[in-house]
Length: 122
Image (tube, rainbow, N blue to C red; front, side, top):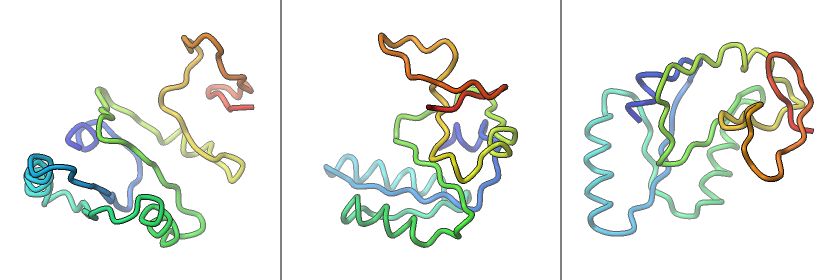
């Protein structure tokens, strides 16, 4: 979360951390993280039903709102200015991927529509 705070440059109205402690050690870790991020305005929500919790969070968004889903091992290691990407976002786009690129190294690369300077999934 510190990497988001330090390097993520995008308009943000709030961050909700949906978490589930699977052991006492993880519970202690989440408590530590909650304390360290208290001043950041994060909303911490303990998971009850992942699908139900995510659906409820999404249902509270405004119709024009954008949502980003990250997992606990996502690290933003340098500045990520997303203003241009978000400015190109339309209702035809379901998501933005920070991982896909023109140098996609998979055996079966996805098909893209080139929309300079970005790529769109076909």
